[in-house]
Length: 204
Image 1: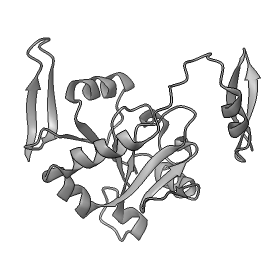
Image 2 (image 1 turned 90 degrees about the horizontal axis):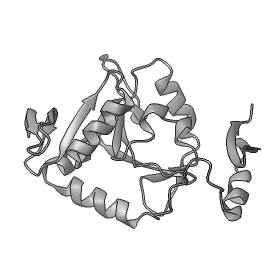
Image 3 (image 1 turned 30 degrees about the horizontal axis):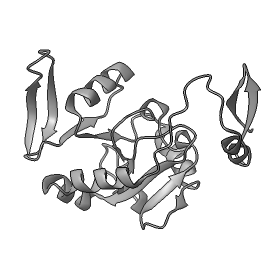
Image 4 (image 1 turned 90 degrees about the vertical axis):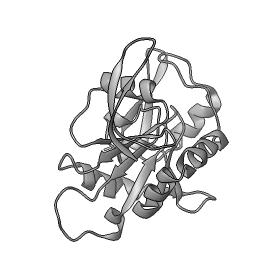
């Protein structure tokens, strides 16, 4: 792995400094501080084959929210893979529109005893509107191994390709009646009609 690699687009002259770039071309960006959505999107478009590793304890409320949201994880047929109806129950909203996988690390920067949940990493795959988010629970050892031997690129792409590919719902687009029925059955939320579209409202 090479650290702080300067990459330049020969066509546009755009330059970015990757935190880590593997010999297989995978860029790993570590993010602790706040990042503007425009900058996040810019890096994702520039690097393409990349994964974020985000400090899940940046704000005081981040880890408690994750613990509560984790209760809504629903198992799938694949071990360690979960669905959650609304990703913002567990993860920061400013990361939910990412187009690449995001690894959330809840270990934190302080040296202290941690539980098994904090020892794991949680990979949030690109979220599609009106569809449950997909989260993978992985070990630190597995993440290091797969990102250094090329398995990460192959496994993640194969997994993403295997997911359903529903069309993204545009703003103000009418939601199909079948999807409306499914949404209305979700116990933690209710929906109201505003301006010809459904708006998610939390139930308090």
